[in-house]
Length: 542
Image (cartoon, rainbow, N blue to C red):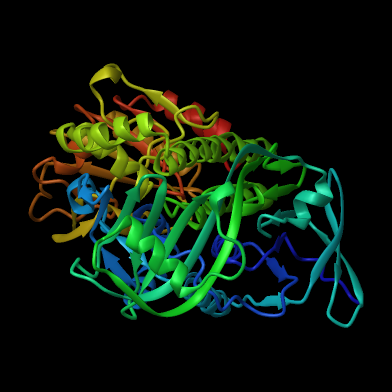
């Protein structure tokens, strides 16, 4: 079989992670193929919740509004312990700097369908029943062997290969990478049911009672996705039935709730695992191929999609010769830490909700409501974790911070860049609208000054050498002077709201990466700091 020679990246696995990666690679200007050994896309609900941070990234891709139109917005989460509400987390209250202060409920098969449609709109296509059977690599790239449905084998040469092929990843197996796990295993039953109860329909609820756990996630079709967690030695066997679901509802609550019209019932076990490495040479792992964990918290698909966004822009810069291969090392440095913290957090939370020891449950039942309700900071941290906007890369080798009063600043290099209002040519806009491209974006804050000083001109000249990879805007609290020509990259921040949100005390700049995280943060307009950073990041200087 003839082999194309212009493929930059081979993506293995056409689930939400692989589809996200393929879409982003194409958007960044690369050629890629996406293959999957399955005969067709999944028809199962599987993952349901799309977190605000993921929606912010899907906005960059151009599919967030399509997803929102197809899904259901959920504004809050309430855990109940022994029938009593421990707290209610209002997402809007804890997420003022995002256009998406809610969790979107959209079944995974529908998420995959809209990502596939977007892939087609960009000229891409999924190759089904194409199984990866061998991988070899050298300094130049990767040779992969694919076996197609008719049994024919194809040898393909690509620059890079990314395994997005799930927990039983063939890519990980062929690389010989260990999938390190813990001794803590959990069993889960899931299904879609129609509920008769008195609670609000569009909110998320979790009920814990003496070692039993059930969570309710609303769906747009009037049903709920229920997730039941068991300790492994107490889990039922065989097919999940409506009677089993009803029995757990009767144990945990809410009292009087009846379930009916079951669909998409299933059972699975999880032993939390993480690949020992996320990369080996020209081959990478993303999503469940790199990490699997408890579904409690609805973080799995979201974490995988964010893996894909983190890797795509880095692969694009390196493949196009605009950055050195050293940049790719930051993928594992950043995302492996996220995976490690996620496994640690979900294991702790799962142990707590499944605890049946009388002393431990008594302490949990009394302390949890007290801590969550009386300590706003704790609730805020929990909300930031659930919504995934609190993820940061402070220890990343490619982030840098230059500021004089770190202890007084809320925002730092490696943090997610927040949204905020600006005025562009007299029209109100949001800063996220200017961050949708594939380039880095430098926001220069002029504070009370104009944007025409010597330091501003020096920064503009510096950015000019990297115009293929960096855009820049000046943000000033001074309104444009009447009668003067409006500068194209001048943004108006009339009351300083955006400057306060970014924590710039007077003058300074923030360099935002294509995945929406802050790469360089400075409380001054030091052009030499900027120049050195850009020289280390890019090979694009003229």
